[in-house]
Image (cartoon, rainbow, N blue to C red; front, side, top):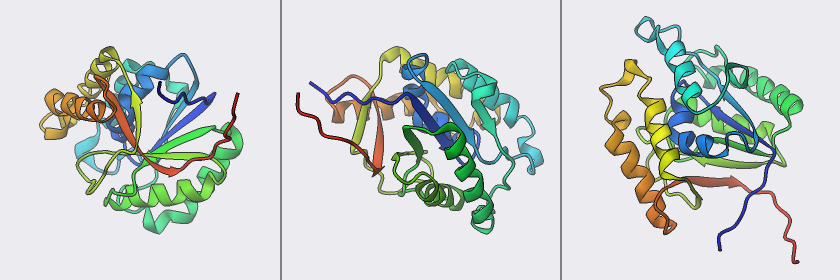
Length: 213
């Protein structure tokens, strides 16, 4: 028998549109309706004219996963300048913690080398002390990621993740948006757990109580 994880309020924090869906899309589809989900993207990427459709694509993607606009926060921290905006990001996350009080937070793995992803993880760990924090993999910018925390998802959850990411027309030529790559990743993580499909995470901080019944 596997371990059951309980959390009423679950917060997903990514640096850019698409990060959360790439790392956690099937899990979000799986727990939607079972928990209070809040998705927070720190940069809307709107300073880049080539990405002008990204916000609408992100909203469509989240809707496929069942996340309504009021639970899908898009901030405007400037992409590739997160290290310089570290304090402002930290203060935003402090407020988020105070207002939402999540039981579990998902953010970028420490194996990620993108400067915005790295800074996001650092500030999440500072802002959400005393809270379980798990790291997801955005694939393209991660090196050495190995999931030590595996969450079973269904084939339907996997298909919803693939459908959600298909809404990103801006990125349709990127290899890590290809359905076969997305499905293969979930099958591989499922194989590690001896399940058909899973999403895998890094344990950045786990806060728990051990109860013997």
